[in-house]
Length: 188
Picture 1 (cartoon, helix red, strand yellow):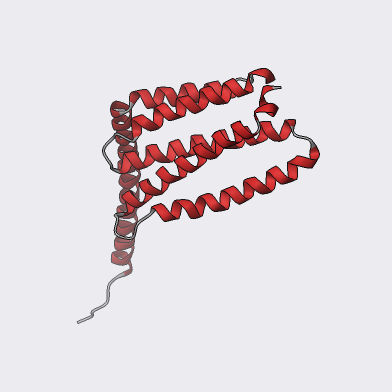
Picture 2 (tube, helix red, strand yellow):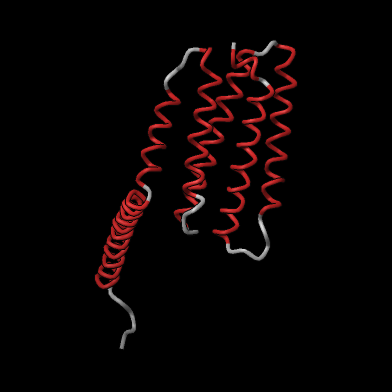
């Protein structure tokens, strides 16, 4: 008796394996898309105001304003961000809260970058290097400061939320300090 498998049977097994693999990949892609759309719908249902305000905020940022209104623009943006921060900090801690904190941190980073660019554009050349070095020092110290907020006994989502919360707070304070320190450049 021969224990060999015929070529026809081997080809059948290979084709069946290939078809099963393709179906599995297609199903995986479909389910991932459905999960992503479900998550987006649930976030939109639970936080409709934050989404609208973020879109409004982004649209406001893209409108170029006259130079004499820079100080008012940044103060207004900072107030809007503070309002959003207060809203998300009262929500239940879960994965979507982490995403909201990440978006908030990104918004503050964007404000910090825009503020730095506006300040550098109006600074004399001699002050630019000092300002640039100070900002680099801030970025390094911000990371160290945020790492202090992360405890060793917390779950990973909670650690990330604590890190982002401190990140937002430190960035916010730095932006407000820059406004105070360089008001003359923004008011002119």
